[in-house]
Image (cartoon, rainbow, N blue to C red):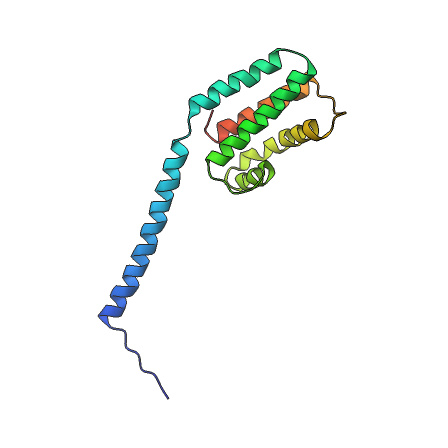
Length: 146
């Protein structure tokens, strides 16, 4: 049994329509996601960053720790607003480094934040807290929210 199938004009028209529809969906998704990232309120991030930097200027280790925690939360908020997948900051940051390779420098800052949160005996010095904030600020600028 042999099937003889001839391509007709209608077949080409249907195939072309499917390809065109796929292209339109991809383009629409691109512009939709691009519009979502442009909706990020940069003023919120700038004001919040000023508050975090002010904590560092108050002195005392607890203020340093709070500044590091808040800076990491702000970075996570930016990652969430960009619709990066992941259930935790770690997962979102891991995914983000594929799209934004310069975010690799923020891994150390996130690890310091984890030490601050999970290790009660961890001592955070001013210089270390300052470095963490500097790295997170770079990451926020790379994400174009600051």
